[in-house]
Length: 487
Image (cartoon, one colour):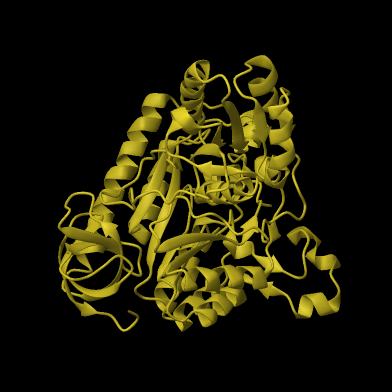
């Protein structure tokens, strides 16, 4: 079973609880229970882990009490995520007292950061595995089966898991994640990712195309290309992105950047919807936007985190772009793809943030008028430059008040954007039942906005043209007027 961490998010009909697709092989005799928290990459990694362990005799289960192995894939990006994981570990250990044969392991970013605390000080887990060490799971499981604690959190310079076919655990059978890069070279002062996931390296584009083609053959109709920073994708034969300048002239001439990868995937499956996440404003180039405009099956939606509207705070965060450069990028997106939806990540209460800085953030939001967003109050993360060099000096009450103002403004802008769709006929890919009505389907349009409409004769996985009749600040409500040309 995979669960997501709850976040401050302006959305009222989200991608939801479709039936869990359990991995089952009649020859397997052991049972794996796995939960994931945090970013989409963690959910994708859990599917890789399930695939590796399926070959070691494990079927997945959604019943914690019957599991032989319990794994939690963790996130360290915010304090709340770590608190949630700790509560789950308490639950797992309570069950373990009843089922002493059960083994508990921690995967992901918390594993790398808190390995000694979990294993030696608190003794609450049997196994700790970092994001680049999942292929070592067979050896680590043998260790814990023999009564020893096991740990591998070594960061890799080349591991991309491009040769592992993921088990689609959290799947509705329609949409799927495809990982294209791992790691991050952008040392934002608030972020632990470079320390927990290592340097940027990209996956062979041929293996990406093979995975996309396989998903299409299996009935999937939408893929999201995943990376901590997808715009930095660069394949030149393998290796870290930072070493590209040392590559041969032939490698440079035949290299594939993100814009080219988008085109290759779009051409490989012209009816497959393509999304991507996450972008970094300092790395997104015009050729990416132009590739999006060129192909109808590349969705007209960009998640473009900005974190703050203040140049002073952006500099303190080590975000290598200014407010003005961000506006220029937004203007280019609007010019090249007029109907493109844009969403944001925003952190309020970063160290030294003043009321003037906060007002700069609100004015940036007024300029862009995001379709939706993910908004958080700053929480200090151990090991980051901000934690080591800056005082967390904004009072909690001030953080909460500023966050509320940001959320309120986003709700206003969300309604403004959804109202733009009313009266239009838009293509929607059906993902499953609406969470509010069994008589309605829920799907998304190209702009990633949730659309709800009566079921009638349509089925999950159908592309349907829907006339939008009304809206909330995050959901479009309409009626189907027929199958789309892509069906």
